[in-house]
Image 1 (cartoon, rainbow, N blue to C red):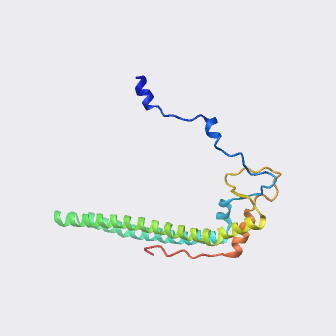
Image 2 (cartoon, rainbow, N blue to C red):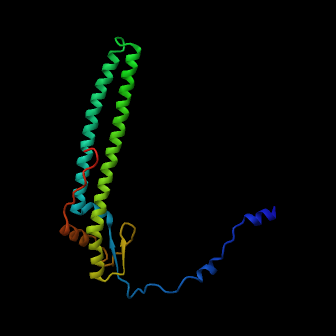
Image 3 (cartoon, rainbow, N blue to C red):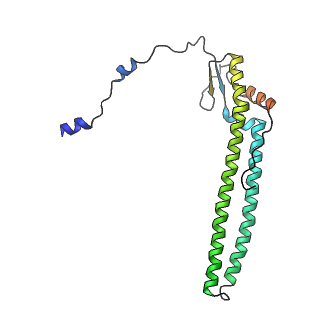
Length: 190
């Protein structure tokens, strides 16, 4: 038993041994310049991102309207099938039921694909805003303010005596000035 246990045990180095590998260098507080950006606030407040959400919602509403319309047609067809049960032969009835089920399956698949296409177009537009507009503004702000570190404020806890730490509003204003609209690619199926 001891031999099997010895073979199965993993060797680990003591913490003191691995810490020796870590350098003593660290950022010096006197030279460190820090800012906080709340990305959630930028997403909620920036005009270009509000506009993108509106575009996405329009496509989602169109999809919802299409779904309602298609559901009504399918419900009507189902009612017709149910009415014709006594008139049609078993074979003809079965063909209509299979045809109906295929239409339902196709509708579900089409709606899923269109919903995914909306999300894909939206994410592509968000990425474009991030890379072409927001990132350069943040990089320029870092350079102008000579910042050492910018932290996402959603995870930061800020004390009351920290002046000029949160630069979110400045970033939103700059982004609004740079771009107000980005056209989302037309999703597949629209």
